[in-house]
Each structure stands twice: as C-alpha cells, then as structure tokens.
Length: 328
Image 1 (cartoon, rainbow, N blue to C red):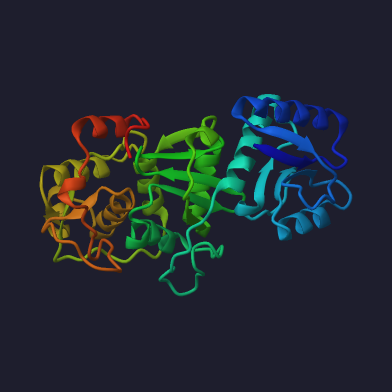
Image 2 (cartoon, helix red, strand yellow):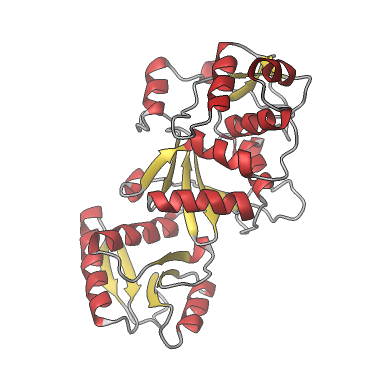
C-alpha cells in the first residue's frame, strides 16, 4: 500500500530520522511517497508544534482528513493523529508511523450513544468516565471485540478477545487510564482490524485496567440488589493488586451471588462491589445468575448474558489469559 506523507520544514536531524523510519515501513508492506504539504492526496503530515505556522497547518490538515504526527506539545483530538516527543529514536518513529497508518485504516461504527450530553459513536462525542464505562458494558458494543478508546492525545486499543489493552507504550496505557478516570474520552468500534498494525504496541491486562478505571470513575449507578451475578471466566487481575477484586472474582466463578451476599462474604462496601461488577461486565465476563438474556439498555442493573453455546473452550480461555490470537 502506498502512503503519501509530507515533511514540511522539519529540522534536518529530525527529518533524517523520520525518512529512515518511513523507509522501514516497506517491511510492513507500505511504500512511502513524499509529497508537498499542499498536495490534496497527502495522507500523513509530520510537523513540529513549535515551527512557524504549525498551528494553521495542523488545523488545515485535520479539517481535510489528513492524519498528523506532531512533534512537541499540542492539544490534538485522538482521531486526528498522534503527538510525540521530537527526540524519538528511529525504531520509535517507525512504531509511531505504524500507529498513524492504523488510525487511517480504522473505520468507526456509528451507534446510538444512549446518554444525555454525548454524541453518537463515530461523531467524536466525548463521554464522562462513568458514561464511558457504561458504554463499554452496554449492549451495542457487546459484540465488538476490538475498540479504540481516546483520551486527549492518548489512543488505546481494547481487545476483549485476548483480554488486553494496547497502547504505543506502557506509559501511554497508564496515562490513558488516569485521564479516562478524570475526564472521560471517546470510544469507537474497529471494523477492519489488522493485528500486524499494532505488533509494536505495548500490552497490559484489560481486566486489571478496567478494575482500576471503575474504582476511580465517578457517576456509575449501583448494581441492582435483586439480581445475582456470576463470572463466565477468570479475570486477569494480577496487575491490579486488588485483593477484594480477586476475592469477588473467585466467589462469582464458583457460583452466582447478589450484592448483599458479596458484601457479607468479602466485607466490601456495596459501592465498591458495584464498581467491580461494572468492570467485569465491560470486560465481557459478567452474566446474571438466572441465565436470561435481557433486552436493550442492559448493564449491571440488568446484565447481558452470553449464550451458553458461545462460552469459550478450555484452550481458548487459557489462550485468552496469555493474549494469544486464537482467543476471539
């Protein structure tokens, strides 16, 4: 695939590193063609935020649908491109270019938001922290295995099938989690997912990531006290260090329990338990104890239940814990 890029007035040392990193894209099946910044076919623009006229160039590129890679500091919508430091190594720049190419390949699925104060998914509407977790746990994204979550300039990829959250670096994943918990973000389903475009991205446990997010996110409604819950699979909680979460997971894997039972057996407050249930639901693990499938608007107030036929087999569940591609 041919990728048309523009490098307007980059410093000589930076331009050299970017060109070498662009040449390395041949190993991923991409041929880079350099074009003038004014070229209407330009697909990726590299620009230094401190350069003269950079703000106008970035604004024009974003409005024209050009993906931008900005060196420096700038408040850039996540879907528009990426922001990186200007001292990136050639290998890191090659990874950044892969990320920019991946952004261009992703196609959001338009779906009703279902929350006041947010636009439809695909319309770049930002959700609050609690709303975002509810969307992850909701029915319209239940069948989406690969999701892009944007927090400011940080882009994360959620892979439910492998129980992993991906970022361009481990620090991006941690920074993204903190920003999502404080400010919320945007979420989109990825239709044409190609794993090789994210081969260089860092990966962490999705289940632990969601537990940390749920504990910090304000605005989550409580779970219904009259419902029992169970877990279809063991969550990967090693990175969370949360003993209550591990205790609750063990109890729900053993059999269904309601909030009152969990509170008695773990000593945890109902609010903390509700947040854990939201995290498990968003990870695609939580079902209700009755085994019935509710309609639209389901949540931990009326959880969606995966049909028994779709429960993963033993090998697939083991693979999921290790983030292997056979787990879907």
